[in-house]
Image 1 (tube, rainbow, N blue to C red):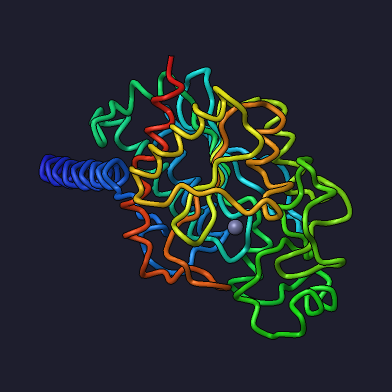
Image 2: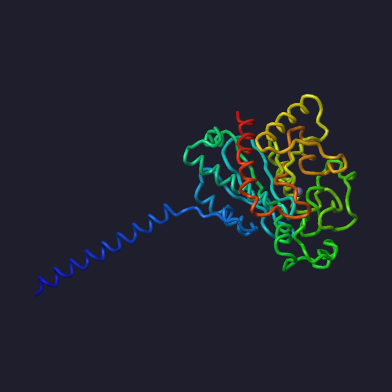
Length: 339
Ligand SMILES: [Zn+2]
């Protein structure tokens, strides 16, 4: 009788051990092979929250290649994320969503982070570039969404916090906020930098798209970005905007600098199929790329993604096409500065 109890006990113990063993193995398998499901591929409106979730997920899957940090808070207190991709000393700074309604630029940059980190981790090439070698040689510093407050206003209208009277007046009493470009205080963040700011054309007060603020870097977001540039002094900047399929590259360059920057611009134009163009002089003061070129005599570009759609966001259905045109741009510029 006792022997039978011991035998049954042993068999039960073995079964329980096997169940525990297999259930653990199953969990490990699920964790190590869990697919990376990013919001950026969902083809729905890309919110600041979706972006933060994607960046955190990517950083946990590819810790060798990327690190997420913050350059400060927006006017409404939202974190302004920055991502460091790669390990090299020469650095290139890329910025998306200076303007609220232009949130597809954030999608392009997060998609680039995901594709490049994956290629580097798995040692495969993209467009003929050895991505892991490139990211060992260069660091891409990406601020995918400089203006989370403006994005939120363009996507959802009046926010919970914020000065509603100011925002309503800035939107000219129009209840449709989808055209909103400014930050949470009605300042256009791309007329905020110290490159002949005094001459920049502006509305006299907060406005959904045309107010340059009381002085350069008066806004938390533009100041945080300018501080990052002063700290790092990158080799080049790219500012992603929409729309128009145009690349702007010029601001007071002379001689060899002019030729150098035009050549890089032409190369980005041929990669994307976008037009290399010169802005009307009155539109080209106090912008981010203007300030960078003016202050450092290094190349800076504004890339306007997507076909012209006027005062609105690019339709989400355009994303795949926009990505196809832009997917090699950051690898091309990385390769230029790699040493
Ligand atoms: Zn813009």
